[in-house]
Image 1 (cartoon, rainbow, N blue to C red):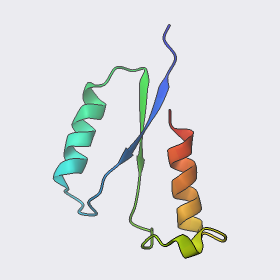
Image 2: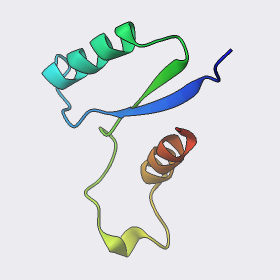
Image 3: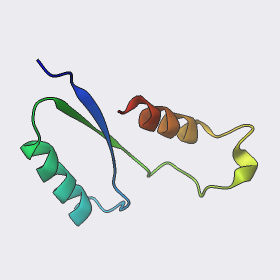
Length: 71
């Protein structure tokens, strides 16, 4: 049996009915069961600036952990 792989999906649009999100959902539906999709949301992220690196806001910490957890 093949191992399950985790896929982080980043959708760059915040629209509820985003075309990119709909396409990503269709890819998820067609993917083999060995792929687990996690949609990493960007809505709570502030604009990135290197000044926050030493003490990043909580949404950035969650975002980074979600991306790093994926294969």
